[in-house]
Length: 283
Image: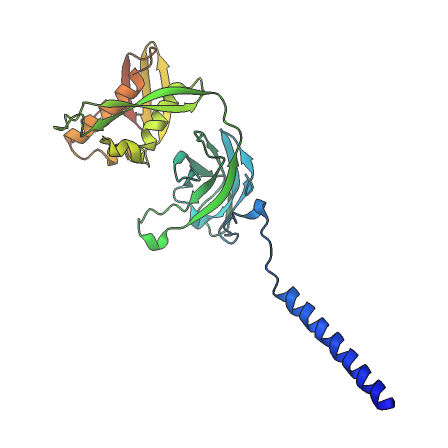
């Protein structure tokens, strides 16, 4: 009888141990369920750069105020570029972050930027803060990519942007440009918005139709004033850096002039580089 009881007790102990082992194994190997709100993980570069606004996966609208801190080595000449894309890879806008203090240090330096961007059909995208790399060497490239969500699209308007086109103008007449239509967020600063679209360049669909981007993405509008029918637009030195020949210079001037002259308030255009109008865009 005692032997039977001992065997029964032993079997119960073995059964309990078996159940416990099975439950422990199941728990350790359970596949975690992804939180849909965290399906896009932001990159973490806290040792180099971090954002204070906007936060990852935050819902944003245009214009967007951007602030944070970055090591001085992230800047060059106290700034670095920022771009925003939708989740289809379409560039929606660019800005330049400015250091708020001495950037020639390896310590963290505060920065700020104001980014105007266009809306697309996408509800999400990515904010890209690029390390300024004047060397152009890919091994020194770096970037912080922050996922964002877009607020509901506001009221829109249509404008035209003018590019050269090797299908509509096979001989490439340099100063002959053709319009493409763009839909942008409604704004009173429509001339600047049109120039921003021109600087953003052509879409893949437009390129397939023969439209050609001439202006470089590093060209920035420093000021734009329209007075008595004259649009005075000042660019940074990158406008001249991309000229490269009389035909290319003529194409750049034609694209800018046509894009601005589509508006009834503009009858003439004066282009300058860092305030200088003489001898710019020379071949």
